Length: 439
Image (cartoon, rainbow, N blue to C red; front, side, top):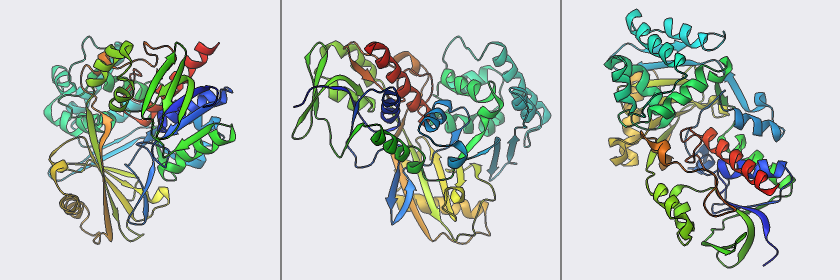
């Protein structure tokens, strides 16, 4: 075993990669260990049925400032990676009039308020009800006294059943991937504040020009290799041993690695498993046990290349589908991604039955479309942590009770939900704390 590596990062998802990039940028040698062959974690590209697709459809917005900063740091221009478009939320339903919200290019938060005032699908009274709540939130800086379940909080603030069903519920599922009946109002309102009140372009949609692998994991890998980082894939860390106060030994399958600092950039369950022998972390273990997970299901339908939504994204209400995304902008003309957020009866269906259900719903919405040529169902059963009310009370910090042992992951105390940006922010924050500790 060689001399201890300055920093060893366990986990090559977006949080681990972001930690590594920030440290490498500051000339700190890094070793990153990933159990899969491919980097990217829950945001990577996979191959199914000879077709490259993402392991879940992801959407970025302009408020993802840390993700955009790291991409720029690695030498990538936003315009090469994304098609930036002003917010356009369009939802179709089977039984009710649709909903359309378009935000004009004026200063925030006026763009959001004017967009709500001119939104289609709600009466003037209903639009004013939404605007009044947003004005109240703006006056109190989106701060609330108690983190109630979002549905309960909205009902207490005079939002009608239609407004909740057609407006707030789809936003909740898109942002938190958690049912509105149990979702954290506190986390939801923070995202709402950052997206719609700080800068106008923070609410823009960033539609990727490529698959998710080429968007971040591959540029990160190239950058880390160029800066001299050591990347180890298809290797799993079996256990972590604290050999003295400021040194660890990581035991892999048939060899070990010594480290001065260790970053656990893995989900709570794996984090618990790797540290269960460290008695100082008993309080952390109790926090980790409280985390639950929530699934995301993406159904990829391949049509003839001329089939299109005629816009990048369409919301759907009244069935099991939540969103349809046209992937022609990601170099995959004719491929439509159907997204089903969170848990529900669809999880009990076989992939074949679910695919048929989705085809039937799409056929109702777009009766002129031909039958799909191929369907692939991707279920990420533990796609996100369940962002339930009170979740911030047990989210851990980056530092732990064991000196030089750190955490990075979207579940840490970033205030953000389980998103790509949340993972990146956690990784960057972890790296900065390590750098401060090393000074």
